[in-house]
Image (tube, rainbow, N blue to C red; front, top):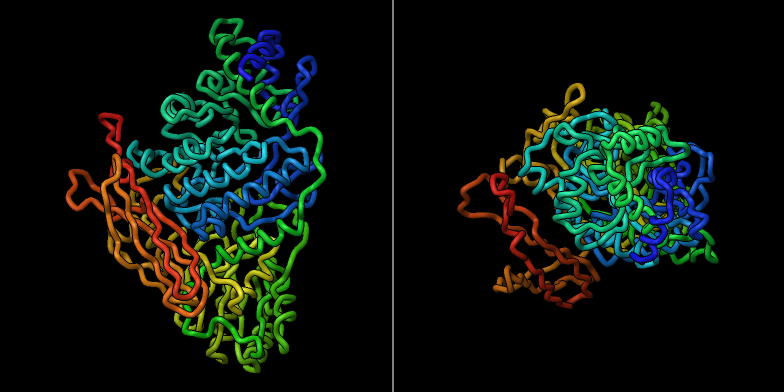
Length: 633
């Protein structure tokens, strides 16, 4: 491969080299006809392949070709299941290859600094270790099919407000321990073919022009040997970007920067060797990821079934007084328009055109003999009329169990803007109050891409966080409610009692063109546990339909770290899944540190009475902090 790349680059004129450093159009790289290389195509794909025809927009206003809409990252992360994410990654890669796609633009893995982040549904967790491990699993799955993955958005791209220009000011220790660690794990363990540099500035320098970020850290320290591209339209100074280690500008189609690059070479400000370095990476990707002839398609039925399994695995049972699982002989009132017009994915560039779409109401009708339904609210804006509230109360009062589908409509969270608050639409909260007042066996099913405030938390008999379930979420949630599937999820983010309890709230989303990360290391559970601030539901929380004992934990020296083992026993009478979570605290520290930090995890599935003894290795980094004066851990 290296010899072929060198031979191709050696034959290219300077103008052709410069041309290769920008895309041909919105989705394709430039072709190299004389070398027999066709232009590879890239497309959005964190949770499904969004292939649009050339000339159509890139933000989802025009539908793409159908592909499986898997649950978005927020749901997948709550599965805490690396094997599942690898399987989903492989399915994404299969679909991409069948559609002639060479690189899938995902996974997204920016840290959830604040629950108001408008794109949080597209990201994995508030914890760097969990984000990195799950992102690496997705990357391995995608690339096992011969299609490239692209981890994004590198780095500290933690808000949508002024995202094109905002300067994220982050101290070095916080940056390394939180905002870069997830990327480090994804790069070193997943070995993605590409990395996408973010729009924003980081400590004064655009991420697309930062040599410390793109070369010193990413390549020299982490050993990344792939291609770095811009986010779409993120180029500011193309010459500085090339020098910093940026290889590809996207999108393309007659780049306005080509002349500037050529002039910089002519003036001696930019060495042609720097251009050659970037061109080699572009050509290497072209040779590695070429998928110009689509295959025979993909198994849509198998992938739909996988999407259903993933939706159930990511569903979190937040509370339950025993009403769940439901008896299918019961009469049920299904309340809320999300039961027929589901909120199953996020809005923006990740929006997928599903191969099919299941609804919860259809699944209820297939499993229950008596189902009463009322839509109650407008699914687009969440508003409700007095008649809608009255109909909901009448239906709920006449049923054994009431199921309220509530959550956040599309317009509440999307790429492009951050949320103003953590509240549900007022109508959804009113609906919960009205229904719980007439039926004490009310189950609230939430469809949302990020935490919400729950002042009504004590009123329902059960609360189920279904997040965004993808195209099979309708049947998956009913399977969970009746106990055919285990609610396998554990929260990958903290649900605060109120927005003002979040440590970053005073400095989110910043002022003017700057946002200061003054909370430092105290993001998510690291803050709540350290400060002793109560939460609605903690990071890692999730109930089960069975019970578990965790027995005989051991810690044994192993290499440069320790092995932690614990025996998990299913002590109930149903199949179930449990997530073993390993946290570390420094009991006597010379620097400030959070009360505890997640440093390992393992998911086990057990039949009644069955046991398993997972082993989790904690290496030296599990106990380390970053020391800026020495530049080391």
